[in-house]
Structure formats: C-alpha cells, structure tokens
Length: 412
Image (cartoon, rainbow, N blue to C red; front, side):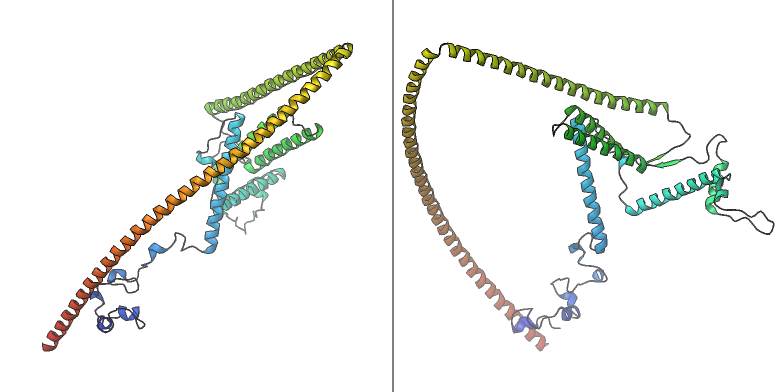
C-alpha cells in the first residue's frame, strides 16, 4: 500500500476506499508517523487488550454476579441506615450506643460462607441430638447411631468423623461433659423478637383502653425495652456453652454494664415520673384557676342583677358610643384602603420604571457585546485567512519538494 498515493491524488489520506486492514498489512507501517488502535505498531502491542482503559471494573463478570453485587451493596446500605437509626434512638433514650467497630458484630457478607457455617452448625447439632438419643437408650457416642458387629468374621468400620470425636474424648478431663450443648443465637433472637412484639401489643392495648390517649409512662418503658432487645438481637451471634468459667474481670464488667443499663432505665423512669407529676400539678392549678374564674363570674352576675337599671342606661349610652366608634373605624378603614391602593399603584409604577430601565441597560450591554463579538469574529476571520494562505504556501512547497524527489529518483 502506497501511503502517499491518496495525498498525490486528492490531498487526503482517507476516503471511501480507505481500510485499516490495508494499513496493518502494509510493509512500511512502522515508518508511518500516525498511531491508532485500529493498526497497532510494535511487538509489545500484540496479544494485548488495548482497550482495557475503556472497560468497567465489573466488565469481566456475568450479569448474575453484577446483580448479586448490587443486591449486596443495597443490603449493606440498608444495614448502615438501620444502625444509624438505632444509634439515634438509643442516644435519644439515654442508652449507651453499641460499638459498631467490633469485628465480632459485623455480619458475614459472603452468602456462601454463611451457608457453610449454617450447614456445619446443623451437622453438629444433629450429631449432638443423636448422642443424646443414644444416651437415653443406654448407648454412648457413635454406638447410638449405628450398631457394630463384634464377630470375628467382620471388621469394625472406621469413620473419620467418629475417630476425630474419639480422639477429642481421650484428651478431655474425666469430670467434663463430653457433649456440651450448642445453642444457636437464632433461638435467643426469636425470644427477644417475641418480647418486642409483646411490648408493641401492650402499647396498642393501652391506647385502645384509654380511648387513643397515650400512656407516656408505659410507652417510655416499653420503648426502652424494645431498644435494649433490638441491641441484643444485633449483638447475638452464636452462644456455645462450655465448662470453662468466665474470668472475674469479664464477670465484673458484665455486672457493671448491666447495672449501668438498669440505672439508666431507672433514671429515665424517674425523670418521666417527675415530668408527669409536674404536668399533673400544672393541670390541678389550671382546674383551680377555672373554679376561681367561675366563682368570680357568678359574683359579677349578681352585682349586675342588683344594679340593673343604672347599668341598663349606661349600657345604652355605651352602645351608642360604640356605634359612633365603629362608624369612625369604618371610615378610617376605607381611607386606609384607598391609601393602600394608591401606594400599590405607585409601587407598580416604580417597579415598571426600574424594569424598563434595567431592560434598556441590558439591551445596551448586549449591543456592546455584539459589537465586541463582531470585531472578534472579524479578527479571527483575518487570522484564519492568513493561516489558510500560509498552509497553502506550505502545501505548494511540499508538492514541489515531492516532485523534485520523484524527479531525482527517476534520474537515479
């Protein structure tokens, strides 16, 4: 392929017959100054993805994997929002905010790993249940799950899981239970959820009994219990009972935390009781005030009945005086209305004047801007004309050089 052929004929390297395949197969491709991904140059570009920078991070994943990642991100976002709401509720109730940076409280995001853990727990629980059933029947260990043949003609079957359990039993202390019960955290969580449901039912029943009026003392207590139970649900993972007692420090710390929570709940309860007592005292004072006002009104009515003739005359005079005052007020209102209307008209006229003035200034500025743009376009046009003339001279000069080179090549 002659790369200069199109330049000689039409002055362009492209055209309707242009093809990148012809460029890639040309023998002089490495001497061509242009570079393109459609025609790579050099051995380092062979067998490599040159469009790697334009691909997304999950381009190599399947649509199912991308959808799973999106669902996981959505669940994580909802979990964080829920944690923030729970922390705000606990802070508003005066409860300690749980530590969210503890790695033991972070849920396992990988569903496959969580599935394997659940399967292992179910298998262990199944083995323990079988051991307990065997113990009830008078058997021990794996004897409860299968029968062994003690005859000379049969050999005992070996199982890896049973051998591992047997080795563990050998190293245990004689006074330890060989089958410690394993209690999954879901049972404890279900119990806490049942407590939360009972608290909500108690609040609903209280409102129904009180005719829709909320019992603040009861609802504050029940909501505090709900928040504490929800925190426990988030903190419980799996509880395994062992024969190793807790350390004195951990026991003391647990007692201290429980005491602090109990004291915080009592303090909140005490504050709520004080608030209710204050409201009751205020309501009692308002009731006494209403009784005093009723007594005063009755005494005033008795006084009016006693001095009714004089008060009737005075009331007639007062009524006439009030009518005169009302007429004067109506006239004043009319005059004020007229003055307001005139003021609004004046304001509208001023606003129109300012708007017209601003529009005139804007038109003048636009006119000046158009003049500047016109002069700029004229100068740019002149520059383009000069550049075109200069490029034309360079083009003629390059054609002359090419013709000289061809003539020199032909002469040689």
